[in-house]
Image (cartoon, rainbow, N blue to C red; front, side):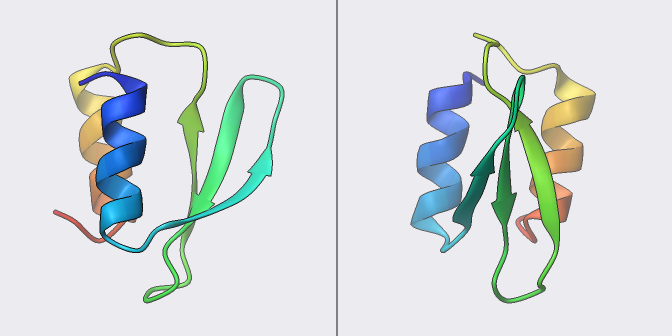
Length: 60
């Protein structure tokens, strides 16, 4: 999955942008209060990383 597709999916489910980092952007799930990084300069996100992000976002 591309980073842009992932961000659209997360925003659709209510995940909020928190801050810009050097290589990652930080997002937060307001329902769980969990924050997690998303790599900014990647076209395709590795499967393990994607699963971790989805789990942190409460989508998996």
